[in-house]
Length: 219
Image (tube, rainbow, N blue to C red; front, side):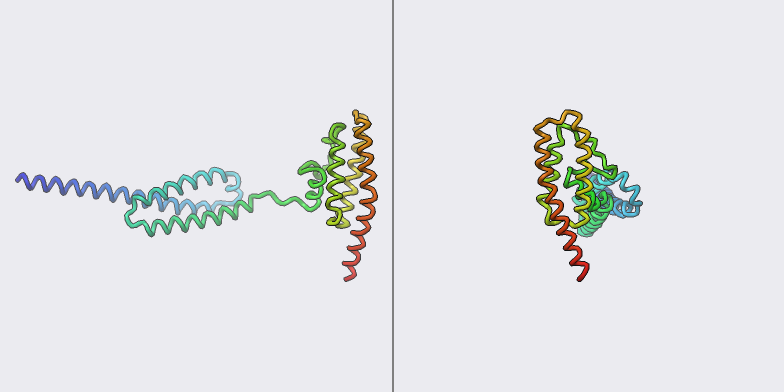
């Protein structure tokens, strides 16, 4: 009788352990399945909504991905589960790259790229405002402008030269204003030297660019 009770106790213990093991495995499998479902569900969300909440989407993805990876340890035959996780990872990375490209700000126009090179990124926009140029920095602004033109003079098209002339005249107009705000004689002299350097460089290269353009048109 005693042996029967012991055997029954062992059987119940094994059954309990098996039940706990099965429950743990089911929970782990559910975690993996939830991860897969999450990746698929993200792909069905409108891009505009994703853009506003992308950081939250990324954080949630990372959490679910880590949980799914950890759950593999509790799945006895985890080859199928591993394959599911890897497939969803690839799917998510492809989708993430697609969204990253879509969310990226549009590349600046060629005109804006030229302005950024001449004055610094974002300094001169469509409003053509030179209010940031003052008596203290105007010499360095002329320096960057003239040196940038000099370094790239062989690359500019006729349209580029027309834009450069427009920017140069606007900078000159600003100089007339800041001269009254305490522009030093030394800076004024250095700017004059830069202007003397720029004038023939513009004239010669602009003519050259126009000539090249005419040759291309005749081909």
